[in-house]
Length: 286
Image (cartoon, rainbow, N blue to C red; front, side, top):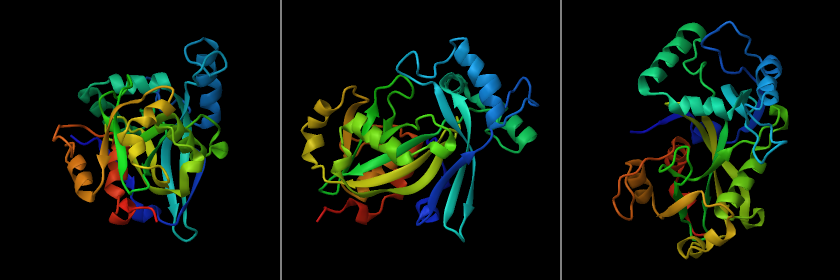
């Protein structure tokens, strides 16, 4: 069953500039009147969690548990702008979202709608970024996740946006890092700029991701031969699936691998980027 919900599609983001500003943080179910503004939450929720050792800010280990939280967006067609408003959250809050059963999710959604006119007000909604690289031959590859969280789902290249205050965030830097980490694709392998093709969220947790496609000079053989495995330090994908045509894309959207017919489940942002694909995207690089 699809976990995908489109927020903005490719047509709605075409030609628009993306801006990030401070927004609201996760509401407290036990105390809905607790302030949700960015500065208050950072001072009275996040910092005490760091000081107690409950979460890390990355200074005492390899990971920064702080994440940016998608709150809402606004669009300005006159000035061709899309603005995302971001609060602050942390990875343990997201793990709590993942652990909830369907009934608990529905209870929280209804409470959010009733109290804040936002069904995801009580969710952490960490912001990530997804990118689908296109090979020199005009094909693409997605992989089966080997991670603990969402393991077994099929995904393009994706990862959390590195925590910085919203005005300092660089989504291109984040997606370039993920391309290098997950597929071993360097910035010099890209042809042109990554193209924003939309924004989506997970129906079950509300986590949100801008989605991109990017043309590369990387040959298809780099993936089919397994050479990509030699370029990554940690394998986040157990195996890959080739997408050569829109028919292949359509099979995946019906949750079936084109190569074998095996039933699979897609990550919501990967479904979004696949739905955005056009025939021209899958063209051989001249």
